[in-house]
Length: 270
Length: 316
Image 1 (cartoon, helix red, strand yellow):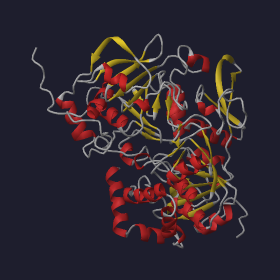
Image 2 (image 1 turned 120 degrees about the vertical axis):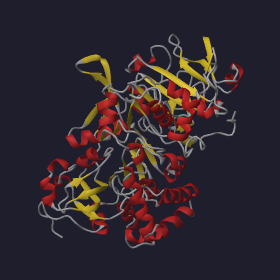
Image 3 (image 1 turned 45 degrees about the horizontal axis):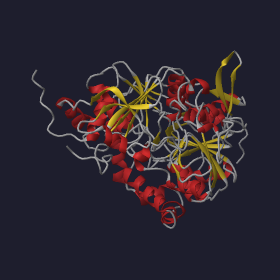
Image 4 (image 1 turned 90 degrees about the vertical axis):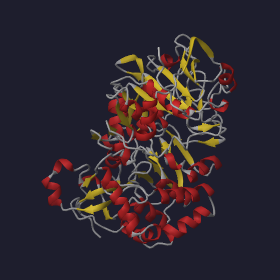
């Protein structure tokens, strides 16, 4: 079979956004903040899942986002929305009510059981660095059935146990969510510049399910504070199709507001 | 000025409104979110009058709260987050919490708006299913979280009385002494029209003992009566109406003008550096200005403000 022509060059960060977009299904109602999650959702909406519906915390329902919003209150994130409402409408009457399919969250730390910390570095009572806090992240992790996380893969971001559980993953493992009173029907996908990790359905722990092209398992393990297992059907993330890469670059973030800025020093352009 | 009925005209200057309704030690509800519709003219006036010992509450607290902290006027904050997204965190706030000069209590955004909802409904608490299993249930400053939510005052985990297998979190009502909100339009007696996104403001305003709004445009009560379905908040909740064009600058006002990224960044740089840069910023742009229009002249100019308006118009 002839291979489709590959893009001449793409960054790992671009592929990270594209791989995150691939996780969305047509018709998904997606709760999204700004940054790479917004790029991924906009990309999905403009390519393979045109019926994805975005919901943004400030009260925005079903916008056709213009490039490139830098805040949930940026008018670019509200362009041609079907409803501009309130925070309670979206976080309460959609999210807590159970009408959101997928939530994107970010955080400084993500642990083995996909608990997320965006509140503080250092444990309770011994804070070293104050972070922004939950925002709507705890609400998303509490009420979404599928959670997506896009992050750079660095050892300090993946400790065995987060310093502070801002947003609940599987808490202390199997049965943890149920014991806490949370919906146990829950799945997490973490897309990084090195790999894709998902929760093991049995153990609830994050495991490596896909590798970014050219990355070895050992590299992922070296940059992960806990030791994830490797899925038996480990595969490699597909490189971007040229047309998808073009949409990302030319339509979704043409000013490279996030693509450029969030490229970390170790992210090499291939 | 005698305000004998709720339909008396409430138009006054920012200086009058703040002097009348913001007391030292007050719990202050903050409107706006991130770089959208932050009540900067009213915030500046509180700083100018140096009204301190405040507890500032909201969902996302951003540049307005951070300037109050930078001015040394805040004792405590309660919110779902403190940050300016792409422009970074709220640096004065972060520094205050890290050095122990500022108390802070964390909730999720839904939990905070649920607290305002309880407040506006006149009930003592509201259940939510957020925060379960998380460290948000632990009171601030706790060394551990062994009893997760057992301490009344922050949140209580309990059973649904109709379905004991189901757990809920009760969060206490929040009723600010006074809230400050910048809106698009209001009439002289305080009927408020918020256009575009409204974040947590409707719940917060209805929960507050007093509400001060600043508005881009003053409209007539006849216009309100002609389209009553457009009224976001009726006059009954509102105590003062301050007319201030560009009153949210450097943040945006939906339908009117975009945010000024350069000025937000300039503030962030001062806030990040801390003293003396933050003091210099506040002297230059707040204490050194008698009114908000003087600040607008120093921070921007007519052409630049027009450009922000044009930028917004292009996005509608």
